[in-house]
Length: 304
Ligand code: PPE
Image (tube, rainbow, N blue to C red; front, side, top):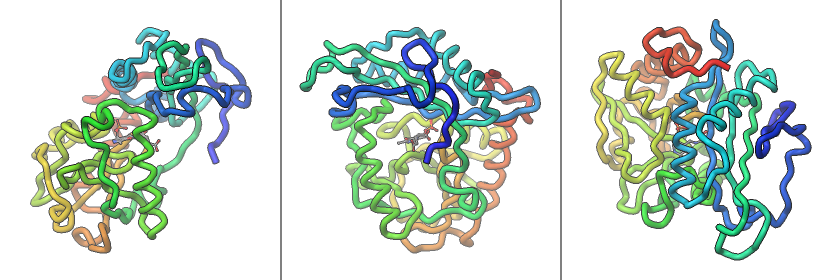
């Protein structure tokens, strides 16, 4: 269950958590055309800070542009509303979910005669794949579901409807005893997790999927910068599932999932079956940065 907070920002004003409602004939609820973000805020010595807020709001605006939705608020208004949502709820650390949706009006597949609504909610949300998963790693399954191909769904937009694909993969993984799914693209190469980007480590070099057919992950981008900061080499290259099997280390990177080690894929032990040394270094640096302990990366923090 979501851990309730106090208020939700809905179309320009704050409403009580329980009053943030929409009609059952809300267009997005039927056809899935909506876009959203997932953002985290962390506690630092100087107070709560939202991690890379500017990048998330820019991606939200770009997602809306890709699917042709006109957000009735500016970049500055969305930035301020997000910070205010964290502030007004008094949350020290939280997950933030902005949503742009096609509101009540007409029904049928042409959405553009309906108003566009925007909501921003924030609540406490712990480790996405469990505290235990962060420390000791999780078990992943290569999904039997192919990732949305690039000209079927828009992979650079965080579109609500695209997540049916993620949910099919996630259900299959959980229901067969795994923790998370890894999806392959239409050509059979590794793409991403149901809601995370993926990295492998071999001989001390990190490798991640190129951006061609995946969401432009902000955590992925952070990991690449962190890795370079720690003098690791990082490459963006396509790779196949068997390269994951023989990697020294594999991990997921995402806002919700943060940096989660993967220690088993399809029943094969990855490396020594424990969180590896490179993953550990990247993870530690990541948590230090989001909590404001690394000067060089202060620019990623937006204090509330
Ligand atoms: N790929 C997908 C498909 C994805 O949904 C996410 C985020 C990422 C990669 C990583 O992107 P970033 O958060 O910018 O590093 N998934 C969001 C939704 C998760 C959910 O369960 O809901 C998130 O992590 O907030």
